[in-house]
Image 1 (cartoon, helix red, strand yellow):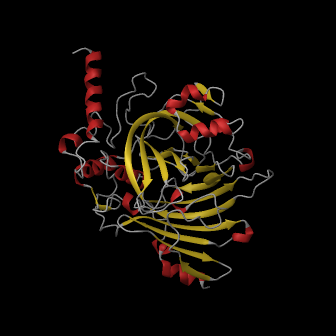
Image 2 (cartoon, one colour):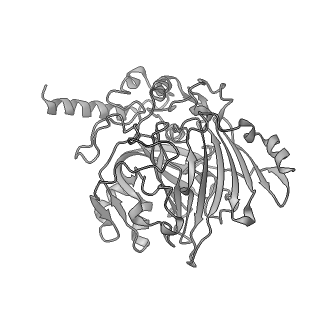
Length: 460
């Protein structure tokens, strides 16, 4: 068979694999035949291995998992693609030419924010994961199962993606929620709130401890991790007026999340049943709802989720320059958006997943569209709509390679509010630090995440 014939066969096989994703609506896991394509026509986590037809997206060959020579965890992360040149720039003058590769929200940003542009670079399929993640993902392909309510997970093997060949939109969103980022991390980051009045803004700086039990390969079942998806403890360190505020959140695989808040002025810890869904995050100037963090968090049960399909899209990727921890906030964040020459965009294939509020339910955003990277399942962009069907908030995240894990991750993400003309940049690592190996190497005290321990600490 000729090389061209081989490529055509591979493309047809991949197309057949993708087609299977939307068949068998009552199936709750992949068939053995579908799962056998993982690591062959599909990558070990379910992406198409092949290059795009025009070659814009290259074939996946395993990712760039090794750190540059001489780099060590804790050091400033160098950009291995710094020599890449910009292929083209999208702005208000030419956005219509690229509309098939932009979301409705991205088009709105380009056309309504003066000077907003997107610099597109060569596509680098840099992301990959340890072999154990691939092995566990392969197991999940035929055994993981959603609960009868269609929102929670009933069964899944830890340290792997639960649904590499998703049958529903909810399964795809769970892949984002359970994207592999290791066992836990410690970070100091900042939240930036833009001001329509201009002038300097004061960042909200926070220390955060995160454990991700589902990512621990020493466990196997949901019972082993006590049904925990993630635990987060967040403490404000500046400005002075808010020092000591604490939020503790437990996210679960099969039930609603729990949250506790501590405010030093009150000197007591209180449970927060409203820390979920479309309730505003305390102290975030009404620019972020709880389930927007980070890109999406918490229960899925207020939406009917559907997979619209896959598409090629311009998305943030390999954003080493933007995430450089030596950069100063004042040099990055402007009144309407961050410095555009710092953010790298590439063309990647994404899953388009749409959520519409269920009949009888309510949500501030009746519709939200999530764009999930096929190589990582990370939500790289999201459009959130108002009750009139107009884009209200536009979100994007900023992934890079954490070679020490190894994995592709993101900390920072931005939510633009088109109605009020402001944006919020959260989990920004500039002027900060992150320890991605803290969970693996025992630098996180599990007692920190106990509500009773928090009460004892808060009472002193």
